[in-house]
Image (cartoon, rainbow, N blue to C red; front, side, top):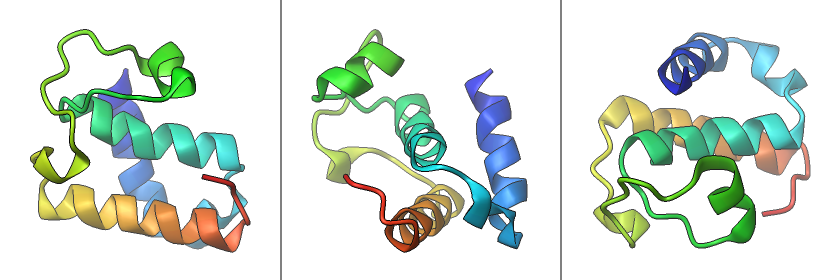
Length: 87
């Protein structure tokens, strides 16, 4: 299911439609990428939403992300800033 969400994000990120995403949706899409890559979340919100079962990386810098995933995350973060989303 998360892979589908990431795929949809990739398709949407290429269009201005990402601008209409609310902050919670952007947060979820960004963190779904990290979850799929094995990141161990630290915040209660993220742990509640994604859990840490099977996580491998405590530091975001250690999470192995493809160039496409990094670009998707950067696009999401730009939109989060444009929407005034708190982080």
